[in-house]
Length: 308
Image 1 (cartoon, rainbow, N blue to C red):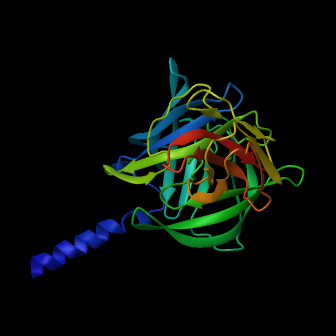
Image 2 (cartoon, rainbow, N blue to C red):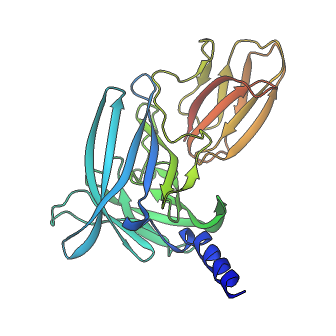
Image 3 (tube, one colour):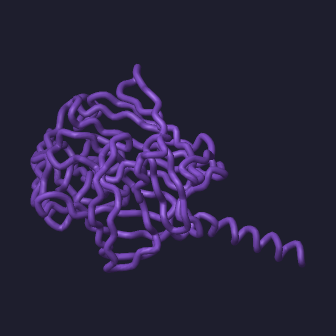
């Protein structure tokens, strides 16, 4: 009986281990795979990998060195490094080992609804960012793979009264890119990110709807399996998004996933239809992914659009 109780205790402890940590530690051997949609370059998709390399000491603090394998095309990649430090509920970053580099606040999971904080704002972890004001809109818990995680929805105030919505998830970071604090997709010509998966302690913590930790495609945006193109416009969009596609012989379905890979909408499309106008004025800002599928779940078309 004593052995059974101990086994049960450690089982429950391990199930809640992730939710008790604000961010992975070096011992967790964490690895993030992030899909990079290069919208400016023929819609190339590649996968960047972030993984822990070692713990180190500088500027009187302990940091974890993060290796970033940054890929541009299938034939080319380079490797960069930056440093993070976890202090209770707060996560800090330095983007080189120079002791004079300013340490930036990346996440603070102690915040409550209505709290205001100044934190990092940038779209490249190797360029020193400017601090921006974040206001916490809501705080709640979500279940991912059987573990409870604290989530914060925030509004970040940028320039000229421009705002953007962001989401922080305890232990995971951001579902866009945990180390890029802002996703520059406002004009549809930059680079958009989506977290594919996070592995930690030899366990998968998060997996996106792609069901893969590695994607490498060139020019696949808005293409069908047989090569027929589909039109999706405007990009970016704010009120409506339009789809134009070859008329199907049978009814098909449009499935839309939100920026954190959760099912957002399912729309039935009758046979012989070739256009659809979708009201998106209640969608949160971010990159959405869609699929047109048959009644046997075969994918006819796939792509993405951006809501601002």
